[in-house]
Image (cartoon, rainbow, N blue to C red; front, side, top):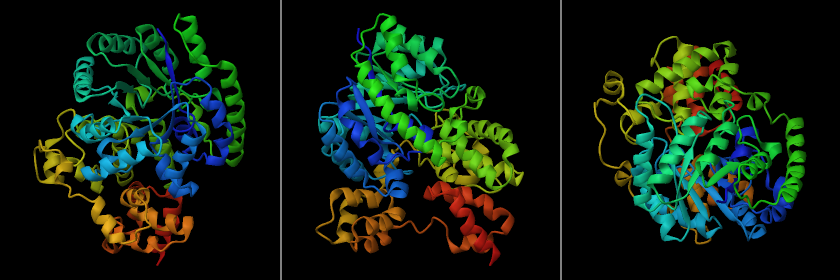
Length: 502
């Protein structure tokens, strides 16, 4: 039985180790070699790539995808999609989801790995349907977590629902690296016995489990695993491609990977990593093993963000308090998996609770929205008193949120009123209105950016917040703004301190 390999160096390994800062010119020369390496697929898009391209790299993410497709005609290209949230941080209307999925496939995506942060299957229905409709592979995803309300039986039921929905494969997404080897063996054995579609395993080396977990998964018959070429493996990234291929072969599994070509690929990315080390992009903490993650389940990216927030407050020594508060908040919220955007929401609220010395004295809008059901139905029971206090309700609607969101694509297209504006640009402006204006201006000096100004969210931070917030709390509020705008916390600090000083 063949074990297939998905290479993550262009997306998740890049995102996990160097904050998705790899530019196109850093990998474009090696794409022809990657195309001939025998990978089942190469994950190259989605996740934070889109955001990072327009915010930091000043690259058009759609053109990046088209270029990879052109240079890799023989390999399946894969992306990660946050269900109804697409690549943003809120839910979008169904017409926008359909347009985005269609556009991604048209530009070169073959496999879309689709997940919902709450494992609320309603929130992946539209994306899955549109993926299948356009002839691409819908890889439905279980966000793996551990809590009093999660069990193997729950995950089996979820996988069956996904198969019935039309999933072409089911992925176990272990974003925190907390899947025990023995549990992986049991879960995959059970899945193989009750569903017919291929099983995929995705994990991270954060806790030290991943290599052992992959070995047990291979023994259990997993069909596909995510790995990263060795120079971008380990730490908060995935296990090394070369090691897993050799391990699988020694275990009696066939692997159709050209190891000699992978060696050439690794040598290229070694040079990339060396340049990122010199630039200071690679943080040493991302390469460390964090066994405490087994308890708090904090993914690597979330952990580095918490450290950054605390560093600004000269409070790094309080990281253990924040970790403990993350555990308490997660319980209050009904034990959701810690994955984007839920992980950022809980991490930011935990930091505020600890630094203010009082739980929920200041509550970010996303937590209020969570209790209003705007992210779906939580896996377990929430703190009813807190829910009533923040949302004036004690129950979640059974109606899928996005059916209440008016169609947006044609409305935005009409507001632009410029025939030369592409479908890709319209979708970019819908997902990241506060970034799109400057990005389009820099990219092609068109006047579209001034129209996109109209799309900006006017509730990111209002004058009333500055008027009502004293200097002591202002810096803490930065974490809220940083979460909502996805901006640099350091840059926001300078701006906020200037405001406080006026």
